[in-house]
Image (tube, rainbow, N blue to C red; front, side, top):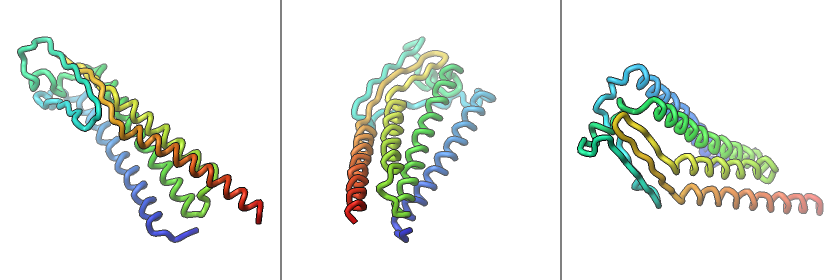
Length: 189
């Protein structure tokens, strides 16, 4: 086992991020339940649509009465129940696919710390990270919410997660080659 400070920090950061994601899940679930119990509390609290951080985005909003203001149509208190449940499930799935890569990355850092860097588990962990990030990309690419008097649907595509997917699979191949070199080296000794 090595005593690398940077690896220890990376492991601690992974644990902290996973803990934070659990807290966000609890907050999201609390919000979801409270919205079901007391919708009147959220009357007048507008839902905002911000897709500026994406490389490509398309948003289509509609209203039953086109003359009504957005602050009167797109409010939390008027979200349809089916839309609320679908979005809750979507955001819980996003939290899960954010949680799992950090768990896999923590596993990789632990294996490096234990000098088991080029094991098959490390290669599998990099591939899992790539798959989780791709699932995150898919989940965050489509947005839809229906309100009592309107709604919106849109797509927003960010190329950053796809870049991370590619890097993850490249790292898996690099570690795979490292494993083969380690095997050859072990046989020559």
